[in-house]
Each structure stands twice: as structure tokens, then as C-alpha cells.
Image (tube, rainbow, N blue to C red; front, side, top):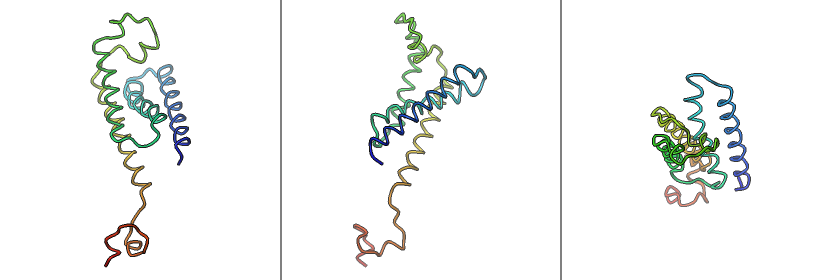
Length: 147
């Protein structure tokens, strides 16, 4: 797939996740979906946003996304939005206001899910060498071809 198509796909995925997050924030006021599923989806949104600009696979990107989410949570712990005196509602929404260890756990779960999906994607796109194809000429540097 071309870089342009990948960027478009990640842009659509970002928009979808952003829309779902906004709908959850506006309409869902429960004790499970909003605090837990919302946080898991949030790291998916950050990942998708970064992949718009980094369409090729980046090693450890799920870890970097987790570190971004963790940093935002630490900013909440120190109540940075209030410290800088921001009345900006968007900044308050992004940075948040309440530190919670459960949020960090959800970020870790979301990033682990992304990492698993990345590994599966690599395995699915890698050419498969089977016993049936090992003896064929033109299969690269296969040591079995020399037997």
C-alpha cells in the first residue's frame, strides 16, 4: 500500500476514533465505557494521529504513545492546567484535571492491543516460506536450496 493511502487510512481512523471519543464524552455518563473504554480508545486516537505523519511502521511506536499518555496523566497529577492559569476549555479537555492510576492502566492496555495488532500486521504482510516453496529456485538465500 502506498504512503498516501496509508496516511488516508490513518486519517480516517483518527477521525472515527475522535468522533467516538466526542460522542462518549457528550452522551455516555456511566462507570465503565467513559472512564475505561474511552481511555483505551484515546491511545488509539493518538496512535492514528501519529501514523498520519509516520505512515511506515515505527519500532516501539505503541510505547511512545504510552509515554505521551503517561505524560498527560502526570500533568494532571500536578494540575498543570490550573498552574498555568488556562481558561482554555480545549486545553483543559486535552490535559484533563483528575489523575487516576486506572487511566494509566487503560493506556497500557490500549497500547498493548496496538502492539499486538502491529505484530499481526507484520506477520500477515511478510512472505510465507513453506516446505513446498523451500526447494524452488529464486526463493532468495534459502540454505535449503543448496542441498
